[in-house]
Image (tube, rainbow over all chains, first blue to last red; front, top):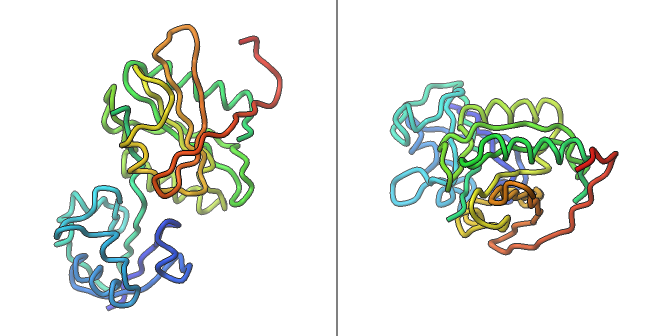
Length: 92
Length: 139
């Protein structure tokens, strides 16, 4: 089952500069585990303590995965996943 | 960082308009050009005087658009409404575009806008001069 994953600039040092990579998994969590096997270190940049890191946004076919089950979101062949750094901050 | 007067003014105007909440947005430019050319106001999903976060779905839309046009975020700006235009610890922890100019505007003084620019790389803040180009608008 092939899922296309778009990688942001900040993580491309882990994918040999690839902008788009492929992985597989029945859920987003499994996909990230698979990606970490292919691109060691990437898992820890996406997931912390069993949850999505708050510094990144992950989209499944244009939906923010936080609203469709997070790491438990189910994947189907041909789905697209996009990872973007969250842009946030504040005066405190 | 070189920036056109009209874009500089749009950033300041956005910050003023959203005061006392923080305003945020980007200026896109051709990949690798270091030229901030296309001003894009973003929604602050937090609508807060002390925090900002791009709305995640709007961000996806804008990032796609940039991808299609071979652009990147040359400037990422936001305002501080009660403190100086200097990156906070939170700003640094979120900074994830090593190539971007992080622009801070302070709106704490209603008369004078303070706009400053930084590189934020591996947790380190480096301020850089801001050169405003183009015709002055009498400010």
